[in-house]
Image 1 (cartoon, rainbow, N blue to C red):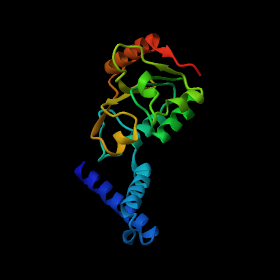
Image 2 (spheres, one colour; image 1 turned 135 degrees about the vertical axis):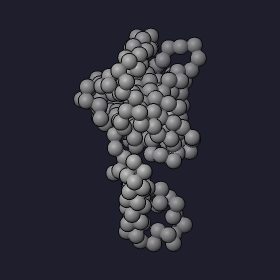
Image 3 (cartoon, rainbow, N blue to C red; image 1 turned 45 degrees about the horizontal axis):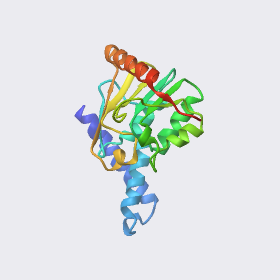
Length: 198
């Protein structure tokens, strides 16, 4: 396991070096850190695999947003999302792509959905099946169920800050009893939620 991790790290460093060389002169430019971040992102998009059972991710050190995107892309039958805040462009794009192929249900926090950076209006405009959580406080859930077979949960909101600045966590679980408990809870939240006018 340690040997495999070391090999992956070496491959990442090798790819990063190759990209930096190809972008010629990146080290001499003031935009060095921005270019290095873009290069790392390109590497992560290639290297990151869809999550497995019991896998964890810690942002900002790990590419948790990419891991989540791969998770959403892996859905083949259904996708249920309960989230407080969402503004990751690529994730929203993948959710909308999936919504054309499989049933996708999304529950969000009403107040947060009306914030300046929220992409909930885009989801609504695109015709996503989306509802506002109906509760006393805030709708602070953060979990996604794929195909009723695996969930992602943790502190990670689906936002740029969660991916790049905040210290957040994700865990992926495929335990059937846990999945069933989350699925029943989601169904209950969905039945109580308020439909969002298109």
